[in-house]
Image (cartoon, rainbow, N blue to C red; front, side, top):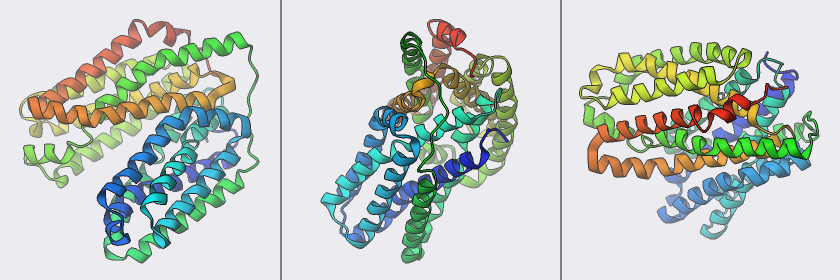
Length: 387
């Protein structure tokens, strides 16, 4: 086990998975499929989704600070309760006005979840295992998101009542998990004001790279299916390479996490960025469809090393007295990168086609690597070992 209080951490991760399943299932699947039948227009649905995610992204830093003061349990319970009200209200009494406002308020409450879980994972990590604990926490949510996208949508089309019951039941479970953590207070230590200012200055130095390294994959968010059509590939053609990439990613994540914990995160982060840049460069060359089996392990190696190194570095840099607020600030900037990536990728695709998108992504990864090695190197090397 990676944490000193495994039962607490397991409940937090269960809350994160349940919350993401409901949120993804509601916004990505339920609203687009069932919203018109509930009297919600496409424009209203777009506003509900957009305002929720915008509020979530912008509120992560300030809500993280509130989490530090109140304790994560109270803020997480408030967010889970708001989610239950929105899901139930949309199903039983749909209204464009309160639906848009409710989704925005839910976004404000939901903003505490990711920073709270990541700060708890860091605070409760066993000595010498911080990078691995943070990497596992950040990736554990993937099955829940996939279930929300690929499971709730078809169920909403075939058995809408069952789908709504699943969403409401899962959100009730999330509220129960949050209530079980109501009195949770994370271990922490006070620090002199000077060291706090120094810690926040290191966080500020991370923000340009945080934006750039989410911008690069964000370029491809809306271009996945058009790219498959351009290459003449189907989803079935990606199963084998995808499984290979996943296996290599898992092995690399654990190995790179040990390296990041025992020596320094930069030993995993910088090779990971180079691996991702090389993957994008090779994808930009003609004949991409014939190189999938080559790119799959390279992508797994690069992404596994990057995730371990990035989480380990952020864990070292954050000021110990304000971890949730600092995690929220970093995540808010990462969210902006994901927001800018899709429209920028679409513009580049329209002008230069798929090679232009991949070349831009490779350039962003290389610039990020340069930032860490030159002006950012002082931040990386000065980052203290986690306590």
